[in-house]
Length: 279
Ligand SMILES: O=P(O)(O)OC[C@@H](O)[C@@H](O)c1c[nH]c2ccccc12
Image 1 (cartoon, rainbow, N blue to C red):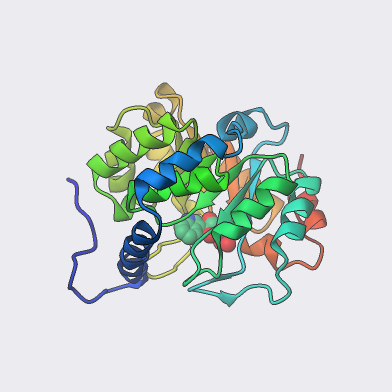
Image 2: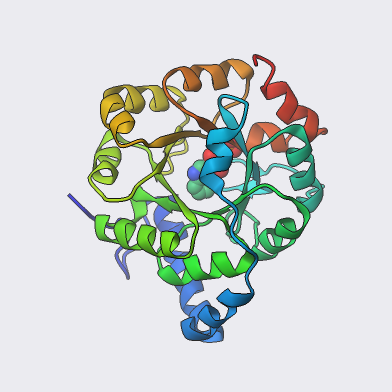
C-alpha cells in the first residue's frame, strides 16, 4: 500500500511530519525565487558527477564508511559547537571515509546547501545530499550544488514518488539512496524498478529510538531478494564502535552511515580510523 504521511492543513503528529510540513513551504519559496526552468539551465555548469555507488563497493574496508557532516539534529540538539564543515569533511576523507553525507536542511539540522557546494570543492570523494526530498525541484537543486547521490526517505514518499524521483536522480547521473526503517517500507521499495542502493535506518524517525538490530532483522528477512536484485545495503544511524560495524557487515551491509559518533570527537580523522580497527 502506498501513502504519504503529510496532509496539508493537518497539525503534525510527530517530527517527521513537522519537517515535511516546513519543507513544503521551503520548496515553494525556492521555486518562487528560482523557477525550475532557470535552475535546470544551471545544470550545464554543475560539477561533474562522481560515482557514489562504486566508491562504496570498491572501498577496501568492509563495511565502507559514509561519514556525515552534521551539526545538529532534532533528537540530540547541537552535536558540535565549533562546527567547521570543510575542515571536518577533509578530515573524514583523510581518515579513509569512502563517501560523505552532507545535511542540507537548515531548520532542523543546521545544515546548508552552501556546505555541500563548499565541501564539493575541497574533497575528491562522492557526496550524498542528505535532505528531506518531497519534490523533484530539490533533486535538481542538489545536482547543481554538486551532489553525487540523493537520499529518498520511503516513510515520507509514495511508491510513485520514489519511482519517479529515482528516475530523475539517475537521469542526472546520480545515485538514489532509498531509506527504509520497517519491513513494510522495504517491501514497497523492493517492488520498484532500478533500485540499487537501500539504506536501513536504525533510528525510528517518529520517536528517535535506536536499535542496530533493525538492520539485522530487515536484512535477514529479505536476504534472498536483496541478493538477487544486487542491492547494495547501507546501515544507517546509531553506529559507534568497530563491533557495531562488524555486526551490520555480517548481516549484509556493504556500507555504514555514521554521524554522531564521529562528529562529537575532537579528532574526527582519528575517529574514522578507529572505526576500522577490526580490519
Ligand atoms: O548520527 P547517527 O546516529 O550516526 O546517524 C547518521 C544518519 O544515519 C542520520 O543522520 C540519518 C539517517 N537518516 C536520516 C534522514 C534524515 C536526517 C538524518 C538522517
